[in-house]
Length: 231
Ligand code: APR
Image (cartoon, rainbow, N blue to C red; front, top):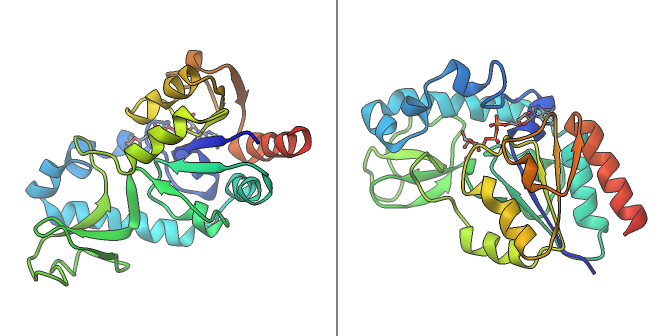
């Protein structure tokens, strides 16, 4: 049975009320990513960075999974073949929407990491006031998210899945950030049918065979229904 590999971006969580990055009013339109999403920014002002991710963790906790998250969980449950879900998002809406396995290639707000010893633990609601690492005691706790200039997580597994994909779908991502934006070419070279589900054409729209434009809460459930109906 056909293997489906899915990549999601901030656009899938937009209708749950979580900000995207490059849309009008997006996080990188109102904040400087150099200060908030780089190791250098963290070294310069850890309190500013921890506070920024504390706010995003609180917003994510207040948000609810939307019909697009629920539809992907239904696909993972009902599709007779393998479905691999990769996300660039650091929120937990896929998990709370019922997805059993999610590869967070940019890490997750739910995780904490010690910049000194590499220890990982579940992040408390707010990290700004709790800087000490529970393992080594150094005041070096950071969110376990992947910043610009750092290596994304699970890349070997993801590339392996892409080379075996029969269908590759990108949902709610602008195609501006690599390596995620290059996944469609890896899948296409392996012979996958590629489809982009987005509000508007992404920066790599021309790499896709098929496009379904519209809000994720409409186009994703319709796409899942069609897959489950037609196989
Ligand atoms: N439904 C579908 N797509 C939407 C919706 C919606 N309701 N709202 C916005 N979009 C689309 C936008 O058109 C845009 O193409 O989602 C995309 C969001 O793009 P970005 O804001 O660039 O988010 P993303 O692609 O996930 O960014 C990738 O950049 O800053 C880093 O680490 C960060 O993971 C992030 C990465």
